[in-house]
Every structure is written in structure tokens, then in C-alpha cells.
View 1: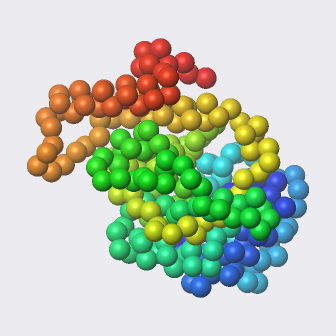
View 2: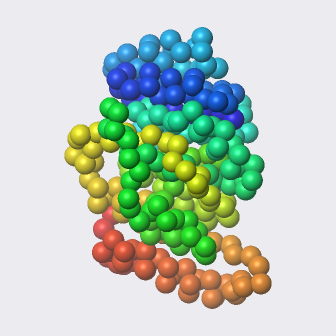
View 3: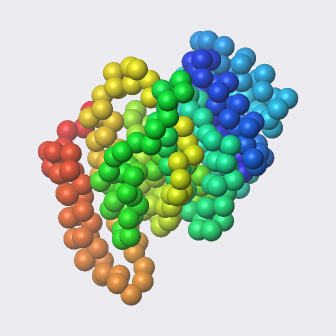
Length: 266
């Protein structure tokens, strides 16, 4: 199993992220850090961990964004399984072993459960609706209404490639990928306990337009995707699928106060 980290100006955090990987009960087979056009000492600080981790550090002269940077890191990995970690986050010592066990039990897209972290000693389990997902039923429909897969997910290289990999997105590159995986039939599971330390910055809400971050991946997927292929005894005929998908699309857009015909594109 390999870990990919996209890092941009993360010199204040990258040591904590890599230290958490070095402290795992079961170590990763490979770790790739992609320095995405940083102007600080991110790459220099990351390289100091090469004696304690099977680490490769790649550097881009100009920032390309987290999606393309992760794609470069995934391409450099030689492992069958890929696990993501953000440069400003960290994981508990049991994280890798639990993620691998979950994938072995039910292969697919494995989401960790997060602990909200302010970078100090205060950790807490977030209380929000996405904790209850995925629920029994149509996982894709649920994912259209709520991005319940946490950034530090685990998946196979085969599933990643089949979904088309990361695209160049301004917002929601992970949600965009999860939607395409789910549409391709990849099953989504979550760990039973929180193991992923998700850092919240003081200026987090001011870093991007939250409405655009929530709506752009949804609009892009619903506008561009093909009708999903359902299998089994409850499958509908093609016309039935199209009607069902059209209804699902409209309900998904309505969730964010949009309409299919009038949804503005930025």
C-alpha cells in the first residue's frame, strides 16, 4: 500500500503528517510527497524523513492544484493500493492497519472517520449528518447529496484508473473522483472508529467560496456523466433508467437551490 501527499507551502505541517506515518503499527510500503510549487521549505523538510520512511519527494516548479498533484504522486506509486493524506493532516498509529483490513474485508473505496483537529491538543469527533453515511441503499444517490467520503481515503489503482483519475478541478476534486468511482460500481465503506486527524485552520472558511465548492462538483458530474449501469433483478430498462437518473439529477441540483436548465456555471 502506498501513500500520496500533495503539499503546497506546507512546511509548518508536513513534519506532523510524515511523523504520523512513521509511527504506524503497520508501515506503508511507499510514500510519495508531491511538492506542488511551494515557495517555502516544504520539500526540504519532507526529504529529512527519507531515513525513516520509504519516501520519494517530487517537486513541481509551478503549482498545478491538489488533483493533478495527487495524480502525479499516484502515477509514481508502484503499489496496488493507494491511500491519501493531506499535508496538514495526520493519522493515528492504527490507521493504516485498519484501512487495509477494511479493504480486505470489502474491496472498494474506504473512507476513514475524522477527528477534528486544531493543530494543538484538542481533538473531537465532528457531529454532522455525513457521519451516518453511507446508508443501506443507493450509495451514488447518497453521495450526490452529501460528500461523506473523507479526504484520506483508500482505493485500488485499478478503480482509480477505471474512474479516469483526478481531473483539473477548481473545487471538489475529491468529491468529483468519488462520484465517478461510485457511478462505476465501486462500493464505499467507512471505518467504524475515527483514525484520521483532520486539521481545521482558523481562516478555513475564508480560503474559498463554500457555495461554489459544494455545487461545482455536483453540477459537473450531473451534466457530464453517462447514465449509470445498474445490474441485478431490479434493473430497469434503458428508458426507465433515464427517467430515474433525470429525477435524481433534478433532486440533487434542487438540494443546492439550483435547477437543471438554469444552473449557472462559473
